[in-house]
Structure formats: structure tokens, C-alpha cells
Amino acid sequence: MARVYNFSAGPSTLPVSVLEKAGAEILDYQGCGQSVMEMSHRSKVFDDIIKDAEKLMRELYKVPDNYKVLFLQGGASAQFSAIPLNFMNGSGKADYIITGQWAKKAYQEAQKYGDVVAAASSADKTFSYIPKTKAEDFREDADYVYICYNNTIYGTKFNELPPVGDKVLIADVSSCALSEPLDISKFGVVYFGAQKNVAPAGLVVAIIREDLLGNARDITPVMMNYKVQADADSLYNTPPCWVIYICKLVLEWIKETYGDLEGMKAYNEKKAKVLYDFLDSSEMFKGTVVPEDRSLMNVPFVTGDADLDAKFVKESTEAGLVNLKGHRTVGGMRASIYNAMPYEGVEKLVEFMKEFEAKNK
Image (cartoon, rainbow, N blue to C red; front, side):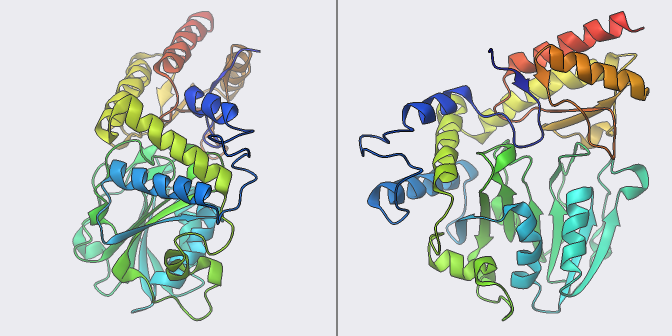
């Protein structure tokens, strides 16, 4: 069977060359006589894999020397608890900007551990925009300000960071990781679940400024204590070895194919423009996000007719364009066009949308 174009929000499509290389090495990784899935995480062979992955991550993101790069487990959702347990320990206050379901879940979880408020929210318009904030919107003594940088479900993205001053800014970048350059020095913590843009499910990468480590509450589970993980070089317990290996291959693919994250961004902008230009000109399909806050990664759109939306999802699936059904809170459709989605896939989608519109006027 021919491969489909997979527009899933996650787990999502991976580069074909990465899958082919992993397949070629699945029984015998570089002559060691075993699969990465079988080898000890304490072995020299795996130590080289995880160190290469960290080196590439630091290179592509230009991570400053005073930041730790950690390879963790528990998904991004586990970080919803780990973040307040590790960092909300000065005033016991934190400010969250609510721009979608994942920011809201992180906010609700943090409320268990301290004085947490929503400094701004776009819930009033179904999270179809990024709320603009001013410095005075944030409490002077907040231990940190939290954002979800790119909102998978709603297709919005922070194109300007909130004006938090010298307060610690923490960002979940799960659905836009490695899609474009990011000035890590502007954040105290950046973290992302890998399954949307970096690797299969099972890995979380956290990039943390070193001076923030070491203040976890006594009740913090040891697996959620970032200082413990940093001191053990992400090897406190058995890490997701195979997923870290795939992450390394994806990082190599980005570097070899696009050179750096500027090149990756240019490619992503080229893909997104094809789809957004069509949505802006179509009489049937409409984007749901204000243009200035559009994501390069997640593009929700609707026809305005639920039955027509359902017909589109059914027929697009039959045409090999899969996982285009939108999230239930938005309806309609959503195309996730992550790094590994080829330009041809977006072209095929737009071509299908044009044909569907012509047939269903």
C-alpha cells in the first residue's frame, strides 16, 4: 500500500528517510549486533546516541551554555505538575496565559500547588487569537509566567512574546518544536513532547536555565525533580532509548536537509502559504484564526456546514489525505503540516479542496 499524507496533530508523520534508516538499523545498530531497543542505556553505544542527540539539539536551537537539555518521560502533561513543583517556590504565585486546551490544563494542574491566575485568555472567541498583554497584566511577584507557544487544536501561535520583564517565562512548544529558530535565552524553561514534530511518542525534551534548578518542593516525586534528572544526565532511570535515537535521526535530517532552523522555517512558511492563500481565496473553506496569529504547523478550517465537513473528511481520507478531522471543540477540519509533511502533501490537499469545492457548490 502506498503511504498516505498524514495530517495528524500527533503522533504525526516522520521523515521517510528517517524511517528508512531506522528500519535498516533495527536489527543491528551500526555493527553492534543489536537493536537500539535492546541495548543497555548504560552502554557506550547508547551513551554516544544520547550525547549526539543533545549536541544536535544545542546546535540547532543555539542553546546557551547555562541551560540544561534533558530527555524525559511522562509526556508534556506530566510537566503540568512538574513545573509548579519545581519553580513556583518563591512567592508561590504564577501567571498563565490561556490560549487553548493545553494551556488551560496546565493552569488547572498548577492551581493545586499555589496561587495561580489567568493573566489573559482568548476563550471568549474559542481561542481563535492570541491575547495581547501588557507588563502590568502580570503580578510583580509571580514566580513565572506560562504560555503554550503554539496551540495545536486552535491553530494559533505567539508571534510576539508577552512583555514579562525579568520574570521567568516558561513555554510549552510541543507542536512547533524545531520548526523555526527560538531565542532560548528569553525563557527560563522550554519543553516539548516529541510526538508532534520530533520523534514518536514517549519522549519530552526540557531545556532549563541552570539557576532555576535545585528548588523543587520536598513533595516533588523524584522522577519530576529536574535537578535529579539534570545531575544524572537524563539517565536517572531507563530513558526511552529508541525514541531518543529517532530524535537524533530527525535532528540529523533537519541539519542535513535544511542546514539550520532558519532553513526549516523557510520551508514551513512556503508550505503554510500554499494552504493559507487558498483559504483566503476560497468561497467554501474558511480559516478559523485571525491572520496575525496563525500557526505554521496547525491549520484549522471549516465550511460552515457540519454535514459538508463530514463529507470532506470522508472523501479526503479515501483520497489518501488522512486525519483531517478537526478537534471537537472547533469542528471542521485541521491540517497539521509539521516539519516532515512534504510540500507535495500540502499541494495535494489544496488540489483536493479545490476539486471538492467545485463539486459541492
